[in-house]
Length: 179
Length: 371
Image 1 (cartoon, rainbow over the protein chains, first blue to last red):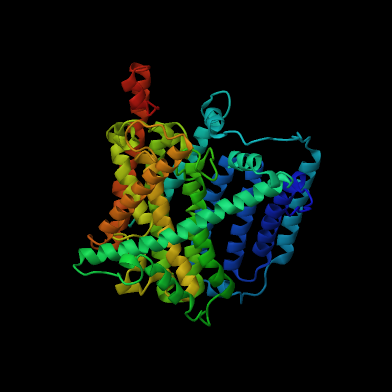
Image 2 (cartoon, chains in turn cyan, red; image 1 turned 90 degrees about the horizontal axis):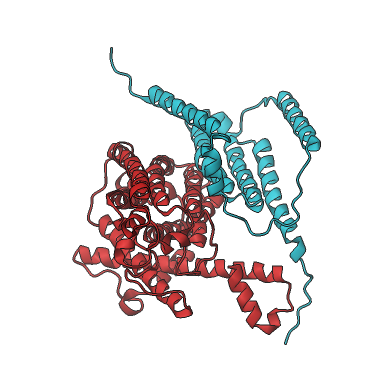
């Protein structure tokens, strides 16, 4: 009988997993911010999205995590890459383009970071000791969306906004008829 | 999954000294490994099935030399692919070129973890299982663009463009048809969806009213297009694009694309079986909760999987390829409106049954509840 003397990492497991997801998100974001080729930046963004989705999973928000993947990776990222590929600015694609507007970007990014840090420091967080097994979230989200006292009106306004965007896109993309 | 590991640990003495977190991690890795082995090997067998069936349909024999009836032909093919030279084109974007097959394979493979093979025979019994299948498979699209763009070849990029346009478009009717079944089931948990279809064959969701019946065909057609199977295989049209997005890939990387394609076929067959054809339920009332019943359920699921795969292969070798504009026409002007009609129809069906037939057996049947 072999007795393995393993260090018991069980209490640290959530921390280790959190670290992995965070590393993924931050590394992806760094690639997105610094990659010379714009396509590499887009795919770095994908890694970042995955890291963030993993963090949502760890918080027990499974629906939000999957919605994050299907919307950001499956939708917005694909659209972004398509846009990059179809605009035909090959210089930016190949990373030859000079003169990145670094100063302004750093300034705006720094301001946003500062604001976020202020907000984080100023919020009183509800610490949860042990969230236990993740509970079903979809039914609660659905009820909250359709409850007039909660989010019915924002939900409907968002739907109308999206519908308007859809109609507008179809109008712009349709074939022009000869007058 | 946790319950299984707990019960194994309770029965095995020498495991009890080990840290439980370590055991959970190992248990999940073992489960993932088992699925990975099963999916890859079975994908090989599906390739063999496809070649034999297509041979039969074209009045020839097909591969029958390696093993009984050619059953292990895929191993010979695999060894041949692995021993090929690994070529990376000089003008390719190397990191993305290397990463693309992995992303495609991940997209096709991850969703296997929520598919139930029998009562409790599921690695991750997630509350949003169906949604996970739909969202994880959308990662594949990103891998396709990566492959097409990084190859730096006109055929690869054209194939990838066609493919991405097609897959994104067909995700809409696919998702909406699945939504119809979610309305009927009242849950996205794959195990619960199957449990509500147990009993006689008319409890299967495909037979619960005309809208569910239509939703089955919409879902299956959209799945075929999502999988780039003929008649929707324009992205790989040999006569126009050589081989589409994987034109420049050789050896092991090509094998990854190939296996991912067949894994996705298996995945969508399994999901169709779970959503519409009663999953592991054989079509008559029988208790499958015992240790043996689970394996009978596994066999039933396997039979349904094989049947659906056969239908996919049958369609591929019977129908000619669509024209590119007809593919988009079918998606946006036929399947999408029809699937929306299905969702509204099923919503009305459930409301009607709830209001007028509540409590009766027929009402429960219309509402999609368990018998």
